[in-house]
Image (cartoon, one colour):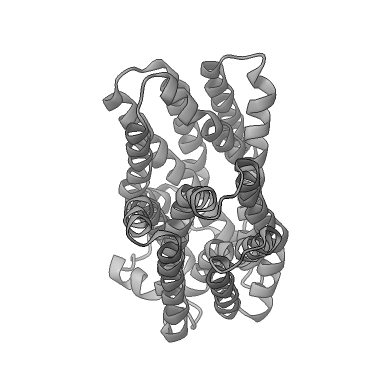
Length: 377
């Protein structure tokens, strides 16, 4: 439900802001405020979830997101919109950390990669359904009212979380009750970092890759490869299709042979796809490469989450998730400005080359990392 709300607002946000007189640079800066809100709120949210429990934080965060979404078309001035975008990011990370903490705490060790993969699929399906819903309702509602619809969906999601909370509490195993162990001594932040090097680097690079590719792949395809706009628009859908089809497979493999080996193989295959893409001349060959990249490189997020379940004790899941989400948002923030310089200086070859080097760094870190190999007690 949250993914659907995200998808519908993302589909109309830039159009709405442009209609209100915001320049392209202003719209980009507002996106950075959203990611900055995630970065600043991630670590405090982890402590709040550890103190009060994921079940208590999730509906509050969903209601906060609903309020911010409803207020967005009702405020004026770039400063007020920037503040709301930052709060959007802060409440969003509250939902993510709560959901991911609950999933890791309540899943068995041989389920964690499958569960985090299904979580990624659920959000992604929401990102697909949200824009479709916005398009269907666009003929009957003004763009301002579409924000209200997204807010209503978020309120309903909070109601679902509250309604299911007693059932989860009744069925939850003792070892999965992260709030019950909140009084235990907390690990230092550095100790948490030392247990999660692969997760941190993988999710940071995924955020960087996602934001850079979203902005500059269409420019590369239309300016350098001379593809039509229709053909260019289809490639992100092919990328998403690879992720949706293979995420459950990757999750099952991660539980069977371990998240880290599967992550290494996925990144290695994705590296080959990235390396070949700039050399391909056939559009259908490009589609295959993009499909393979979507099926492999997007596995960094769910597998990075699953690795925490093997590296941290349950009472620290919230802090681990908050740290990983902060790194993901940092990648989202740094991707556009750094990739834009690379693209401007070296064009498409340099763009894909530096993305390949980042994924190579993920591969190397996973090879030398030993902190996550021993299950936490």
